[in-house]
Length: 232
Image (cartoon, rainbow, N blue to C red; front, side, top):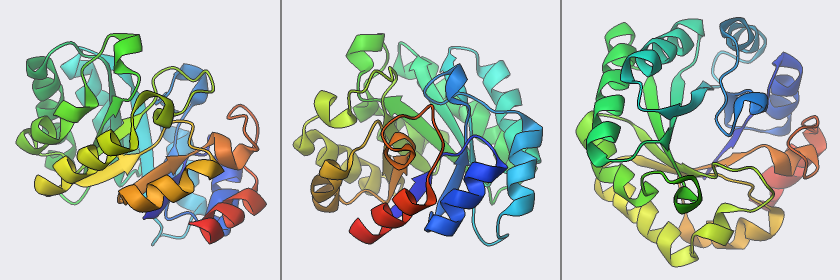
């Protein structure tokens, strides 16, 4: 499993990188679960991190606006993100999801075919009235994404493990691998979830709050990243 840590600025990115993160995922929690940060913040993170360490950037929790999402995705790619991550927050149908992802993939891959697109669904999809993340592997494969992720849309302290059973998360991971996609699990993951994650074996786990001491609105602590890396 690779460890994806989500800083909000270059100082946090340095703490995450020094702690052993495998992917640095620039986001802005003030704008939601997968809130987008500014292009210059993405660039500033790219400038201070080892060039061999990949940068990811979130572009937002999106409703059905494929044009807006495609422009945002291109902006993240141009700013230096190797992984461009979109949240299908208010997407109601498989057709909408496919249209969104197909256009995002085109906008990113036309710019640089080596960059990766991450499609994120939400384990609390019933709560936010969105598409089931279990549909994402098939849709994502058809659209040409590289990674499918499961996160939580509402950041109220509840974990993905409170909305999805371990069996469902195993199935999500299997569906992704069957489609030759990487799988990622995020969403208020706690240290006590690590044994289950070792059984589930996603390719990537996404973290912020855990390495901020439990409060995602505070600062990433290098020593907590190091602890998490050891326990993984």
